Amino acid sequence: MLKELDPILHSQLRLALISILVGVKQAEFSYLKEKTNSTAGNLSVQLQKLKDANYIEMEKSFKNNYPQTMCKITKIGIKAFEDYVKDIQIYLKPKKK
Amino acid sequence: MLKELDPILHSQLRLALISILVGVKQAEFSYLKEKTNSTAGNLSVQLQKLKDANYIEMEKSFKNNYPQTMCKITKIGIKAFEDYVKDIQIYLKPKKK
DNA sequence: TAATATAGTTTATTTTATAAACTACTTTAT
DNA sequence: ATAAAGTAGTTTATAAAATAAACTATATTA
Image 1 (spheres, each protein chain N blue to C red):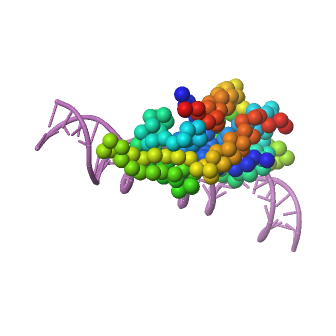
Image 2 (cartoon, chains in turn blue, purple, yellow, green):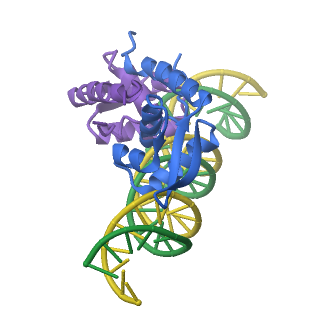
Image 3 (cartoon, each protein chain N blue to C red):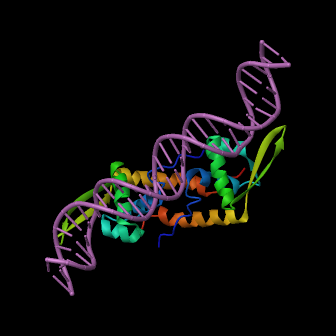
């Protein structure tokens, strides 16, 4: 009845990141940092986890001489997000006895 | 824009517990244990946290000679749950750029 | 050229979640 | 009667996750 919630997405920051990335073609590190109010260190770690799970892709390049990390959600990531949204709904509606 | 998710409720087990308790007058430890597929130890800890936050009340008594722990959601708990449901919705809908 | 800023990563610390071990009985079988 | 197994938990120990602090590397500005 109560499905397991994907532990990769059941984290405030990672969920926020995926939630942003699902609505946009791609986003850079700094943008995500600002939108989520996260510290760079935490963001770096959590993006890496999303990448390890193949939920996002990261491309590193340079922009105006500065390093730039571009993030993009994958199909696997989109699917995982949709599943998570579906799964958590069960938790959000009170159970009738 | 992205509201903080109540850390007390943003936990799979505690969210499941509150989700069950919000739909029922009261429930006993064993019932919650079965419904959530949790271990007794974990359940004990998480119920205590919900109690410390005043989200639930616990009453210990005896039933057929065995100890019995009855759990009941409080008004504070109901409010917290409703807020959490509202807050997480923002995360669940993709953001339009 | 020294100080400050950008754009991160890595390591260390704290917090959470989970599992294992333990308490305190009760019931059932021998 | 007592040993074994079961009920209903709690406490302590361990593993995993989140977060913060420190660090790397280069660029810009004073």
